[in-house]
Length: 185
Image 1 (cartoon, one colour):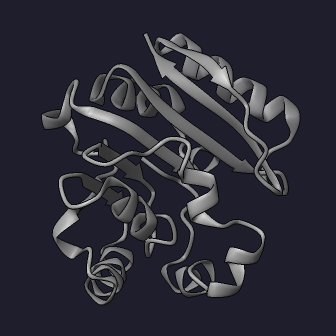
Image 2: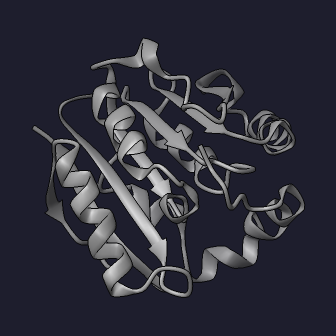
């Protein structure tokens, strides 16, 4: 699905504990994830957000972490094991054609696409797939880096999400990001 893919080795910088100073996963995700939820994280990389998603979803929840790069997922599995949440995290390798989440139709409570959508050439297909995976009323948080996505680009992304059946429910402030919370209706 992606044409501009974050290099796998950059993943080590993205999971740096220093990043928590300006983008704390717990603070960002706590309003959206509760115990027992099923969470989808496409473009999870090495799991900067995945570990916290698994903690918030709790022992009865599950996180489906999807990435194009097996090396990213391998590092994520090691990190999840060290954090004691490996049983809550399922990893999947996406293909150039899709996320490989057809089996999740109507089962996902929350999805996170953090610094991802701008890398995807077929954004409409991406939003269609996530829309199908979410339950009615399920939410998708999209956060795009301001350094990569300008206001017009984010407006175009929002329009594609709306055409896939989402409506904008909120726009939380996340440092250095353009954000929207989309709800499936």
